Image (cartoon, rainbow, N blue to C red; front, side, top):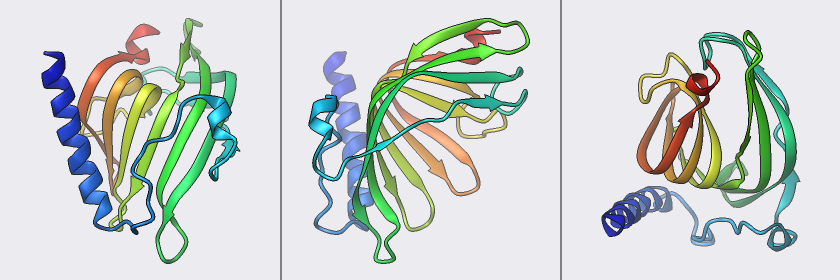
Length: 184
């Protein structure tokens, strides 16, 4: 079963990489971002951060969802750009821990969203993301490509954001926790 999952992920990632490689310059690095913080200090890595947030009721969850940042030591780099200088391939990595709170019933949980993400920006506006490790994945309640919720992923996932706001998750090799259900 594990071999079948690994082969499915490899095939999907090959398809994603081939799709984006057709538009990427030869200088685009094929390897995803390294996870250890000490490895991020060179190679074009720059510090970045996730701000605290409040998502109105009905946008993601049926209730207002608040996110407080507990730990944030994130890094990002642009691996390739389009001729106009806009990012074509970007990597994100580093520590991110968030306290999620349902503001109506005051239930809260702390979740580790420490993982790596490689983002491919396609010329038509589509974004393809390869998620590895733990990541936060908000999906609007009105989304048509995948059920709405604020997910914490653990494993390997491919997320496709289409122009017009449709988010799809065609590859799901791991666990997903929907915090809208956890905090209801």
